[in-house]
Image 1 (cartoon, rainbow, N blue to C red):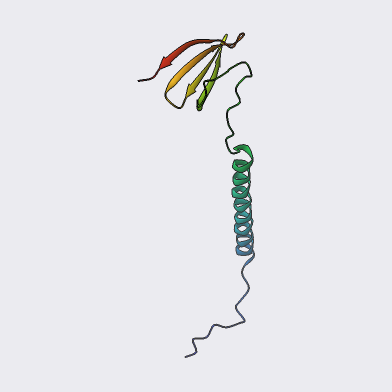
Image 2: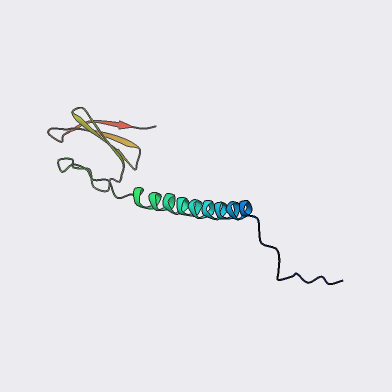
Length: 101
């Protein structure tokens, strides 16, 4: 009894060669798709930058901005100490201060 594999295996039938080639092609397409999705995430979602406030808004010293939004005629700034500051959009004056409990 000889348990060594033989080098002269019979060739695969045509339909199995086609199937093997299709599976190889599918693998390459899937690898390309995963690389494309990773590339899209990296280029479309850049690192967050600091918030850019309009020039007319003057915040108190030491105030850290955590959120900013624009409404009709006003700006709202949420600070790090849980305060919402509402500014007039035209003049930049502080209209209202809301303390979050």
